[in-house]
Image 1 (cartoon, rainbow over the protein chains, first blue to last red):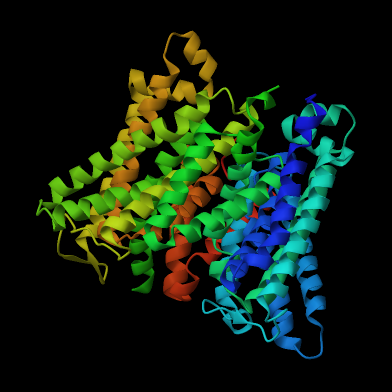
Image 2 (image 1 turned 90 degrees about the horizontal axis):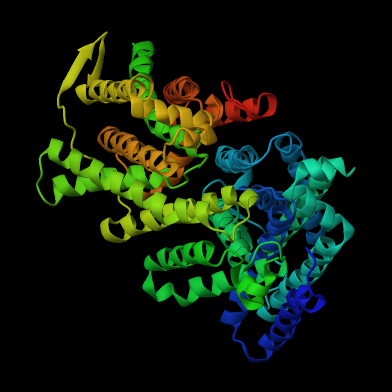
Amino acid sequence: MARPALLRSRPVVAGLVILVLGCCVPLVGSGYVLGLLTVAFYTAVFAMAWDLLFGFAGEVNFGPTFLIGLGAYTAGILDARLAPNVSLWLCILAGAAAAVIGGVVLALPALRVRGPYFGLTTLVAVLMLQNMVVVFAGLTGGEIGLSVPDVMSVSATANYWIAFGFMVLSAAILYGLSRSPIGLVLQASGQDPVQAGALGFNVTKHKLFAFIVSAFFSGLAGALMVFYMGTASVGTFVDISVGVQIIVAAVLGGRRTVIGAAIGAVFLIAMGEALRPLGELATLIVSLLALLVVLFFPDGILGMLQGRSRRD
Amino acid sequence: MLLWQILIDGFAISALYALGATGFTLIFGVSGVLNLSHGAIMVAAAVAAWALAGLLGAGPWTAALGGIAIGVALATLTYFVTVRPIQRSPRVAEAEKEIFILTATLLWGIIISETIAYFFTNNAKTVLPIVEGVVNWAGVRTPSNEYFTAAVCWIAIGLLWVLVNRTRHGKALLAASMNPRGVTLLGIELSRIHLAVWLIYGVLASVAGILLGMFLGVSSYSVGPLTASAFSIVVLGGLGSVSGSLIAAYVVGYLETATAYLVSPAYRTIPALLLLVVVMYLRPQGLFGRR
């Protein structure tokens, strides 16, 4: 896996470019553009958290929305019940904690199995959560959605900066983690768990750690997004199609890069918006495009930028 | 009364589930592929039959045959567009192929269902039943089509069993699911077997889809739940085990029907999901699966 130092830092370069671009947007963009990008940035965190699990730990999690939904609904329900007495930020932290706990409960049995079984378990978790939201409609608002009394800010610019700052921070932590010794062990366990185990690394422990980190960021981002939108609904946080979008974003941007996942998410949201005039065809075109990328550029957008020299 | 109703309805629904899941598990057993466009192919076949009957005025048998043709064509296309290129791609690492195929078939399924929604709208479509009328049996009035559905499903499953266990080509399929390398050493082209499995799968999924269209009606909204239910049945029974899938289909079918009748139709899928969770915790390889 020896790669020239310059190429290895290419995601960092891409990240810096995004950083500069992101700082310039509030100067020129309208409230509409800022609002769109705010959602895109939260989606970017979802995708990056997913990439840590898939790209590095080698576990395909079909239920990113289980973790996101847990975070979002926990934060939302707490806020709706205890609104004036409890600070909004406490609710957000509780959301992240709930996602971590849910993640551990899900991961402990799921990590005993490999490959498709892990994916299946996570998929079932999403279906369960979706059903639970509908069953406990009194608490969760059911299919109509849960509206929360607090919002983070009414200013589009402030919301933009919160989302942007959160994304940059998460990207830095997740990217740093992926390049750290822990990230390398994770990558080794993902590619060959038997050999990684033979080298004396506790594969399950590392994967569980990756799952917890992934759950933390997913839950946190989900909780933050609730207080940006002012409402939590199955359609925006839990539905399988949301999870599909996150997975597509990560694969589209380039798996195993963390930064690529963020690029993919922003690209996907922007594409969806740009194609909106086409109505129902928009989803079709985005899926077709994603399929073409998966088939012909398996290394994703960032992989294309890096060229073929990436093959080792 | 209610008991008989549950028994009869549950039997028909379970037979449908069994047929749908059989094809799904067959592909996994032979080529190790989980086809996430399963629901989309079922719905496409049903919508094709509906369109042939409704828009072109074809008879129910012709429409059903047309639907099967479309379904088989789509299944073949799925194999050539999404599965084979990834299986042969030198740029995707062997360990990641599974995930790439899952993603690709998922996207392919979305493409199919969005195309259907674009041309035929999201409205639910009911395929004209082949058998009409109502049967009064054990004090329960049941549409004859329900009995027809169960019969067709079991005949199809029976034919599959004969094909796999009693014919030369079928035995090659079975052998490929046990030991692909051994089959190639015997001079049998593995890619041909894969294509054959996808063709068989296409027939099974389309028949199940069309029968479902006659029974309950389909729309592009049913794509996700259909894939998910085939998925859960196959997991419950054990990936790759056909007999396991059949039993699991009946467990899930009866659980759902009983919940719908005795508790509330809104909670229909929950007990089956709970059972699935319990099985995943205690016996992740499924009831009859191999690791």
